Structures are given as structure tokens and as C-alpha cells.
Length: 202
Ligand code: GRF
Image (cartoon, rainbow, N blue to C red):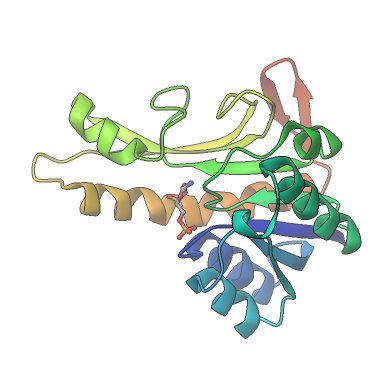
């Protein structure tokens, strides 16, 4: 089974969705390490409760961002990680790490990409823009932020009385469905990337 490392920064509900899929034997992969760039976040409690080793690489503990991200890469390597999942990771991963895991690194983003890429407030941006359909995307991570080939997307309606909170919750439920599914497909070797297009093999 593929060895998966998950990068987190906060709440960790997408990490939890991966753990729950694993516990239902639906992930087809092993969660071998959780790497956080902040200490004392709920995601680390979730990792602990699920019996997954965790590593904290806080920016303050390193002389530079590069050194911090090299430590993140080293933690992934040390656990023999084959697939990396950015699950609510709030920083742009250093290109060195991205390149090392090219084709084996996924991110979940709370918008229908390429709309509302790049920001940390995609749900608020969608609401402000006035779109009637919002959603989420799971995509391969490349050097360009939120611009890698799209693996899966799900759409949700935006209602007239939506707030950032209600819309975010509706999108998040779809993230929790899509992310484990994308990991399952990648781990099973069922994703073929050709240019920007990702084919899901039967
Ligand atoms: C999610 O909405 C994810 O798409 C975005 O940050 C949020 C993380 O939530 N990148 P959680 O930490 O997984 O609960």
C-alpha cells in the first residue's frame, strides 16, 4: 500500500476525512506521517488519536523558510512517503519539495479552479464575486500555486442567504468526500496526467 504523508496547518478536518476513509478500509493507502508547520493545532490531536506519528516544523525553529521546508521534506523522506497530501497547509511549499514529489502530491482547494486561485479566502471571494455555483478542487501540486492538473471537482450551489460560514461548510463537506477519493485513485495508479488533463483509468 502506498505510504501517504499529510501536511497540515490547523483544524485538520480534511486530515480527519482521510483517517476516517482509512478506518473504513476505503483509502487503499497507509497514513504514515502528519507534518505540521504550527504547533498545538487540532490537526495534531487528530493525528495522535489516529495513531499517526507527527512532526512539527515551525518557521521560528529554522533560520530560513528554505531550511524549514527542507526539514518538512526530510520528515517525509524519513517516513518513506510516496504520496504527499496538502490538507489545509497554509504555505506555498518550497519548489524543491514539490519537484521531488512531482506527480505524487495533491492539494485540496475550496473553489472551482481556476476561479479564486491563490488566496486563503476562496469561499469569501466566491461570495463577494456573486457566483451562483461554488465548489472545491483536488489537484496535483506544481510550482505554480493552485494551477496543477485537476483530479476531481465538486460543485455546490450558493444560496441568497449564504454567509462565508454556511458556504464554507457546504464546500467542506465536498472536500471531505473528494480528497480521500483522489488519494485512493492516485494510490491505485489510476490517474494518468497528459498536459493539463487528468484521466481516471477504470
Ligand atoms: C480547507 O477548506 C482547504 O480546502 C483549505 O483550507 C481548509 C482546511 O481545512 N486549503 P481543514 O484544516 O482540513 O479542516
